[in-house]
Image 1 (tube, rainbow, N blue to C red):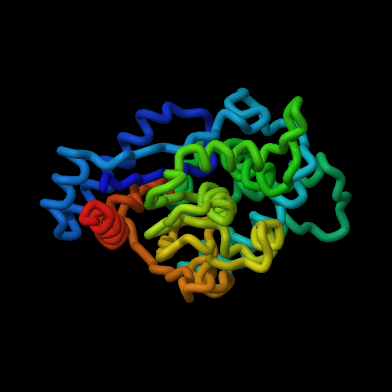
Image 2 (image 1 turned 90 degrees about the horizontal axis):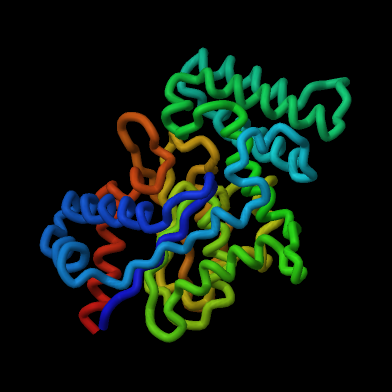
Length: 317
């Protein structure tokens, strides 16, 4: 049986889906070889490749790709500030050093000032100021790939736009539904699909898989915000949070230097499905810059190995 592998991207500006699929495929093959699956990597990625799909939805976000799109307030900005505040608080529990602790406390004060007006414009200004402060942390600009505070806020705003369940098109279909439809269209409607999702894509894939009726032998989430207790979890559907019924295994990977994640919280907040499948969270440690991009995760042997094994198991049937 020819396996199907579906990649689901996260936040960001419009991109070349074919080029991004190739980048993720190469990273996964490199990780598979590093995990000791050289022959499997060759069979699966260099010769009779599996049916690899890239579920792309980046063009659907309002204002995406428009220079300076973050300049005007939006209804989601107050919740965006809450999301960034939760990430700061999570990091403050165990800062790397005194300097990081000082930067985090300053950003927290900017996000939640006392005695100041909280209108939409004020919230956006406070969030941009806090984002700029956070970018002074050693490595955060390179770790997250952020080039400016405006870029950071613009990208994170997409999480809020999805969870707001608004931005309907002319037919009255909300942004979140249109995004899930893009992902669902790439899944095998009858046979097994291995799903690898990143960042916001983990939320999208989680919700999409609850509506999917074919088997998903393995669901892999990378740098997921699902564990954010205040900013993300309460707005996800369906509730209470549980593993989608057709998922046969769920591995959640997080890097301590990946700022907008909640560590191993995904495994703590998602209940098992009726087959007793629950997410298993595993920490990875990437050296150097840019730990958030999916390709950085996929090149990790501990991430790529289980993906290759799941694809191999489907092929052997």
